[in-house]
Length: 132
Image (cartoon, rainbow, N blue to C red; front, side):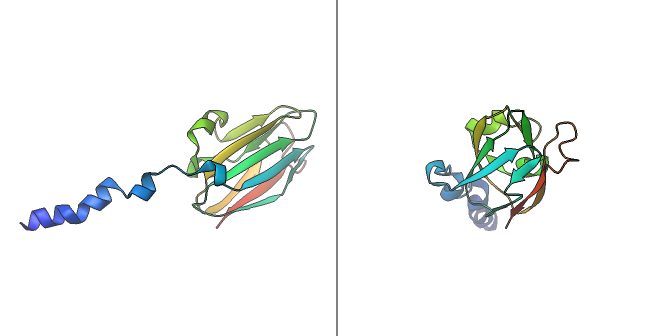
């Protein structure tokens, strides 16, 4: 009988709660616009709330391409299934004048972001993602 009562105690942990299994309502997630331009991100410090769905709207204002590379951030976040293919090796590539939206649920931490194009980081295209 003791083994059976232990099973009842473990059952909620094994199956998870209904709220945890429910997908976020992405339409209600706040939108954060991030502008990529010649050697700059705006805002330079991106502040998000841990566990709260958000839509990152990346806009490349330059004629040339840039990327938004934040490997640790994307690896830790839960990315909307439809957006996973846009992130390759922790990087989102944007052609000149292109924009893209990525929805995710961030995990607490401080993460670096940079453009990996030749010399772009050296010229100041870096930033930070702060998730509290």
